[in-house]
Length: 519
Image 1 (spheres, rainbow, N blue to C red):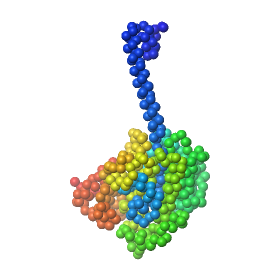
Image 2 (tube, rainbow, N blue to C red):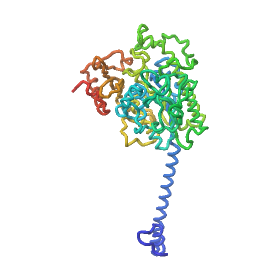
Image 3 (cartoon, helix red, strand yellow):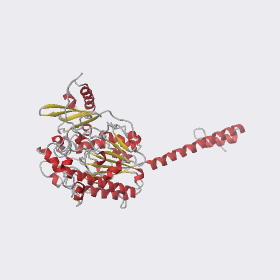
Image 4 (cartoon, rainbow, N blue to C red):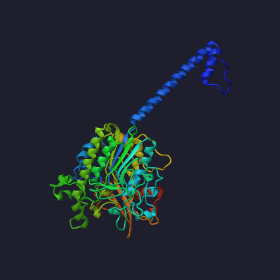
């Protein structure tokens, strides 16, 4: 055998040369070395292969149901309100639920943007509802920001979106739908390059006639929307079931998937629902639903509104509950429930007249608190966790952790993951929750309210025509927020003020300049 020239010798050729030319002891040594080396290489390859297979098998699917305007106390299993949610009552026994979960901005577009981006409003540019009034100020979700859906897509997921989006500004000529007629236009098509990694698309901007909703298919043009003669949540779950069954190639069967189902009810338009969902409330005396002390009296305009709408509001929730049940049954029938993370939440709550507030976008608990239920068979620890002070800003990092994906390094995510708490059923995360709202579209004007909430206290400042109005509540002793205890010198107030100011500075919010200066 010829000697292999220096610089071109493979290790195999060198070994062959040594075996032939070197003494026996060298050949024995080299044989042992190669044997051990090859065994280690084989074992390492086996480990890598097993890890790859395990990773592929373990990669969970994700299904997210986000309802609109569903307050966190309106769940039957909590026993706080007389609302009929039989399916979720059953599901909660097998799920991890966060009882103190809130939105950071109790309005549709900002809350959705926070959830998708893991950033606060002045960082993701959605600091108000997306419509034609805020469009001149650039209030819409930037396409260059990476959402969790973009991260999942880059990790090999096939992503689907069904229902309400409400993150793209209307522009002229406005889409010819009823909520685009008048002073403010609301509804807009989302072009493919603004869908943030969602491959399957069956959605709309925002539209509140729930019994005749409208949608754009994945390949529809801006003018190519269509209406459906069916209650929105029922139709959307029909589409989700088709996605799970995949008979017409709705998804790529060889990839893990995520699917977000964004239902509009129980949003305003309370009268638009199938009447069978009102049946559980027909024989319930109205007075028995008007027991909370934060509900105004019948002589008040808001008190009248609450009495008018509460049964319809509950009926919408009961209908959404039924559709979640259908969805879960379909997942099980397709054998997908074994390895699918199911998250049920809302974008914000609803006062419905409580505290003299007609819906949301205020500092009160019915507006801020939202459901947060996570089902993952044999993975999450079932039970109600009242230790985790989580909010919508924490959704992104938590989801990535549950999916076993690395947190993004090229984008500053503001939230904290509470995946470990969901899996273990114990432990706290976050000592405070920050919230804001009612921001005017012109960023030069410092406007709206800002606040901080802990397990016991809530401090909020609201800029009104009367100046800066402060509120401080002891949520433990006064859960309905009837007694404003604000005094500038209180130690608890000063502590929360410092926390609030730090958050405002870190989130690029000039509101911090309005706060009292305390040592």
